[in-house]
Length: 296
Image (cartoon, rainbow, N blue to C red; front, top):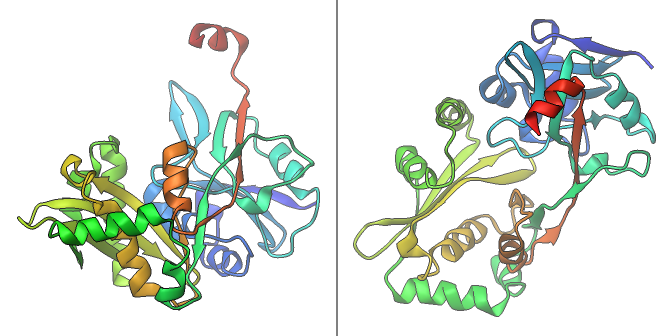
């Protein structure tokens, strides 16, 4: 199997993106534009004439190179034009030994019995029906909270300034370098018509809930979510997601909620009618025994 390890400068980004667009489980995170911003200098494993792709986002600390999940990058792993059973283990064995630690989310196309990997949870909602039909799949608590938000004077709007969204998200997104990289990525995607910003404001104009939705040809990704404490009892986040669904129902897009492994969030996303799509997590520790001992 002709799997090549390519350093960043040797990757043909145009061929990479063209191939990724044809992969059944291709996503926005594995595009060269996304990786260039969120993991500058990323390397890759490539099969043949870009028939299968495996991005390697890496960093270096104390002289040790390691592969890790970039900020706001939910799923990577192996992407194949024509999936072949048993190919994933070969790719995993082909990751160069100089990467001493690997902690990377793969994608749902990488589910296989050939490798025993822990699973993580994601929820996705297909927006292929009119809004009225999609809304029928909501649990009653979602409909109740949407009504409450309207009754309390909350209003949805598009075009919320990114600076306000980032400020609201900082309560749980503490990676300042990652946030700066995301600002540049957002600007690039917005120029391509692939970024939308939603916000929910209270009757006094305060931003109560917000999110960025990144888009590709098939999927909308719910990213950089922020919730003000004052909005949690008003149904603001319920109204935000409902507003996006209302605007895009019938489009054929899939709304990807990006998780979650947290039980309460998983229930929240499934309450909109979203279904579970598990994906594997890769963890490999090649650190010398004495470093492992120090870390423990």
